[in-house]
Image (cartoon, rainbow, N blue to C red; front, side):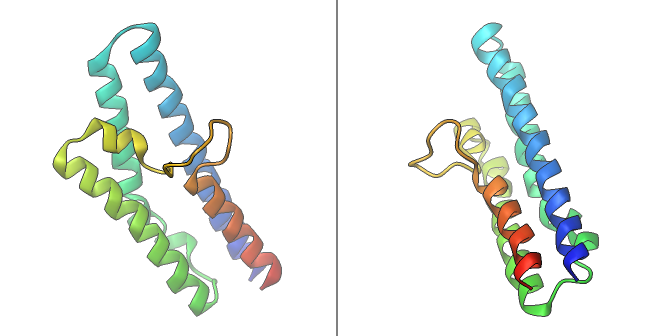
Length: 126
């Protein structure tokens, strides 16, 4: 069962890394190139990636304990739901704030990175 948690955690970490890369590129577009359109498009791609996360996770959920699978699926649906909402209202600010709590300090893990750690530790304790 531990292998299933590792696979899911690896996938989540990969998603988090891709999102960090999108954010880095977006920041560069905005601050280095003053390209607001590119920034908007990149923030939208971040939100789309998050909006699709719950659906894309299904194959990684195989082999998890039932309680864990339900809890993890619920959290992934919250990530996806928030991202979908940001896309529906078209708020670039909302898109940029996805995964970051109000008290976020630069350099700390975002919510998705912390969630990946939690999933990995679930497999260790499970």
